[in-house]
Length: 394
Image (cartoon, rainbow, N blue to C red):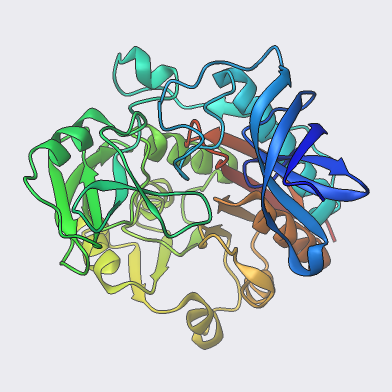
């Protein structure tokens, strides 16, 4: 097989690439769009050569939704997947991916729309998919230059500016005189307080203060969404879908700093109960500051599976799940369904994991009733889903 292929590009696939075929073999091609004809350079082969990875380097027939990438590093940096697509078309591609994952892995057909997240500022660039990321992990090359790793590589590409980074992040970087060669640099900013943090390697994370869901939040480290409008969007979706009622008992699993538990506690009132379960000690310490004054809130610093195994609960009214990218998984979901909640609200950052867990929950009598999808990561292939599962009658 030649190192350079001429490809007719097919459908979008999960992971920021599209699918093409060459000589009977699947080619996952980046920097292309469905319907295009491109020349692509092979970058790697899958196990036993079953598939090929390639980068489009020349567009022969362009999609009408193709645009000139705003960033000069697009195509070389490993961070952004869709800078070459018009912002509305990016959301269409993401919707197609979510629908395909729900169908292929979850066995369910459901129409999906990816919703833009309202900007907290009047910044036109943010509305166009730039200047939104408030938490950025940089790498430093051996000469001390700040940058990002190339796609599927340890090589660091030095960059002068990241266009998706919020201006507060850019300012914090510019105010930092030097960077340790070979180190990882975490930069965080709060749009609401104006605070910024720059930490190197394993340095202790700095505490920032955010405002969302009509209250203040203490956040130390990474337990916060990176888009300035994300927290309000997700809390609103969870509240709208779950509809927690006065006096109910709700479990908030993988509860972080208490973002969902706090508003739910307000909804269930002093006659209700919220058990918030989180394994990370610093997140739980932040949650004690954020929502610990509510008598109906009970914080547990435990692994979720351990909590579910050891709890003496026999039932609850509702459950919120916000698991890591790998998803909640069969073991956790089985124990959740044993509690017979009327509804489960699942916040998912990976549509493939959500699709797999849709199938698991269906096996335990819970069907997917609604799903909302938010474009919290413009220019990338990532989305955030909020799914509502309801118990089958009988």
